[in-house]
Every structure is written in structure tokens, then in C-alpha cells.
Length: 515
Image 1 (cartoon, rainbow, N blue to C red):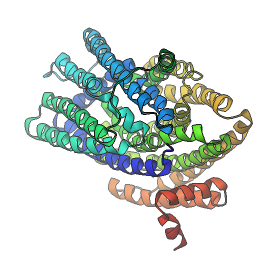
Image 2: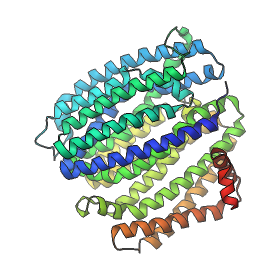
Image 3: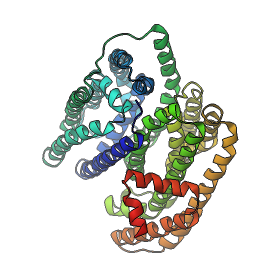
Image 4: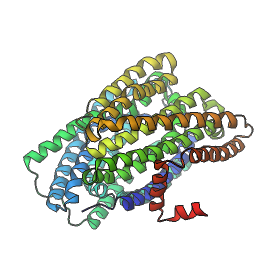
């Protein structure tokens, strides 16, 4: 069965973006309420728990990615028996994983006070709250999580997204009431626990309704199980690396600088992480389609797709980077006030991190879609450990600057060169590498020049924070995007990107352009 890649990706991106925007706006309101009504210490504590649980999720070992990848071929061949056997294996693994996370999570309890240097709210029980968060994580693995693999492999993430939107609505309503009326952080966490349970059960129901032919039964041949286990083992280092990079910053800041510093840092990181989350939806929606394309299309076709996506991501990331440079400070002044603001150099560091991370995410998308976990098994671990060591050293000398710079340096000097080498020795022939690097370098230089010019012009616009944001956003949108169009409108990547979006919008884009 050949998956309708563009149709499915378009549907997944649409519902994914809608859900993501929804999940960003409402939690933003709740984070604001939490900081103003309960204090910044609670927001910092919430971020710390999230980071700790991300570390505990290492027990997942990349099982989900390995199982979904294993489904691409049997789906293409309409091999229902293999898919059912994969689901059965997936269910067994996730039950064990849930148990491992529960046990490992309990071993962390004695060390919790040492992870918080200052600003711990005096009216809470740290251990009870931690156990409630731990329970929410464990239940995600025990309650029908294996059925999500069928939806993901068929590029039907939109189904799960719709379910999450409904269950999250209920959760957010309860949490807003809890924060504004009761001001009770325990009830706030309890709402997370129950919404996770409901979401898993409903998603499993729709997965079974859409694909009733797939049920967890049967056994895979031992040789095939060995291949899957090898993929999972290779994915462990990738999982470990991403967790260290994603969680170490928050844990290090809390342990060395305190919860208030963590809250301030996460306030700045929140809009950046939000945009990254929206772009990640595009990656997630395209993963199964790219995996299917790698199996069924030529290497030249897949390389052209990589170039096209690189151009699109550089354009989108370059525009977003300019917006961050111009809007971050007035937004923070309007949102949190000057007491919880950082200086402009911190914004520049965060923007550099954002752009590099987006390029890195695109390269990782192709690695995951191609199942290149064995060849790439050491890179994420070495990059992450380098980042952690620099984190622990640099935070003591430069505070928050050290935390961000250590991540940027490790990705730019270790992670990206390494993954490029792996991609162009395994998935693509080396002859394509020089062509790709030339394009990537060109896009990056253009982004730096455009964003610098726009920032130079717009930073002179001052006044009321809201006025600054509106005027700067208009100028930024016009200048950045029009410059990209002028520079690249005659290139193949630009025309292919327009054709792609035109196909996704069923011809509406070209009709708009012609007008």
C-alpha cells in the first residue's frame, strides 16, 4: 500500500498546528496565572518536574520510533499479520517500560531537595507532588499506548490530535478554575493525571475503529525481534542525547541558580519552544511519508526533497528568528514586567540556538525516517555529554549565558557535522554533500544578513511595548519575506516549495499569486 504522503501530511500538519496553537495559548494563560497568583517558584517547580520526568522517560529507549519504523514495510505490503504481531510486541515492551519508570522514579525521591537551590514554596509537599507527576507519566505507557503506533505509521496523527484537543479543553478549564478560585497546586497536577488517562483510552478507541483489522496478537520470528531490539538499542543513545540536551538546562539552572532563575529563563524559552513545537508538527507529519519515499523512490528524488525542505525550514526559521530578535523584549516587558527580564544578549543567544536546532531537527528527521539509528548511535550521546560537561562548568562562570552557549557550541561543532557525515555516507552518496553544504551555507548567510539589517532598522522603534511589537512585526514580515522572494524566486528550490504548498492547498496558492 502506497501511502498518500502529501494528503496525509497536509491533514496532519493542519490539525497538528491547530492543536499546537491551542496548547500554547491556554497554557500560556495558566502560566501567567500561576506566576501572578502563586509565585514564580511554582512555575519553576513545574518546569523542574517536567525535566526530571523527561530523564526518566529514557526507559522508553526509542521503542516507539523503532516499532513505527518496523511498520512501514508491512503497511506498504498490506501484511496485516506482521502489523498485529508488532503491536503485541509493542504492548509487552510498554508494560515493562512503565514499570521501569515507576521504579526508577521512586529512586529519585531522596535527591529531590538537592535539585532545588532556592525559592521552593514553603506550603507544598515536594514528594507528594512529584509522585503525582510520576503517576501521570507511568500511566501513559500502561494505557493502550501501543495503539498510537498504528495511527502514526499510517500518518493519521490528526486523530490523536483531535482527541487531545477535547481532553485538554476539559483539563484546562479545570486547571484555570483551580488556579483562580482555589489556588491549589495539588488539584492543578491532579487534572493532568486524569486528562492523560482519558486521552489514552479515547485515542485507543478511535485507533481500533479506524483499523479494526489490527489487534495485538501473534508472534514475530526471533530473527525479526532481534533486528527490532537492535534498533531499540541503537536508539537509546539518541534518546539519551536528546533528553540530556532538553532537560539538563532546567535541572542545572534549578540546582545552581534557583527556581526563580529557572522561571525567568523558561519565560524567555517559552515562545521559542512554542514555535519550535509548531515546526516539529511539520516534521512529525512528514516522517512516515519520507520513510515511505525512501523505500519506494530514487535517491535523487529523496535528495531533492531534502534540499526543498531545507530551503523551506531556513526561510521559516529565518523569519521566526527575526521576530524573536525584535519582539522578545517588548513582549516580556508587557507580559512579566521588567523584574523578570533578561538583557538583549541573552535573546541573541536563544535565537542562535533556535536556528541551529531547527536545521539539526530537519537532519534528524531524515535519520529517523531512514532508520539510521545504528550508524548514528554515538553522535547524540557524545554531543549531549559534551553539552552537559560545558553546562556544569559554564553555568558557574556565566550563569544563564553559560547554559545556552554550551548547547549552541555542542550542536554547532559536534552534532551537526557528525550527522551530515552520517547522512551523506549512508542515505545519500557523498557526491551530494558539497552541493547540500553550499546551499545550507548560502541560506544561513542570507538569514544572518537579512535579520541583522531588519533588527538594525526596527530596534530604533521604541515606545509603548504593544506599539513596538505591532510596528516591528509588520516591518519584519514585509522585509524578511519579500527579500527571500526577491533573492530566491528563480531557484528550483523556491519553485518546488511553491508547488508543494500549492498541492497542499489544492491549487489555491498559485491562484492567489497570479492575482
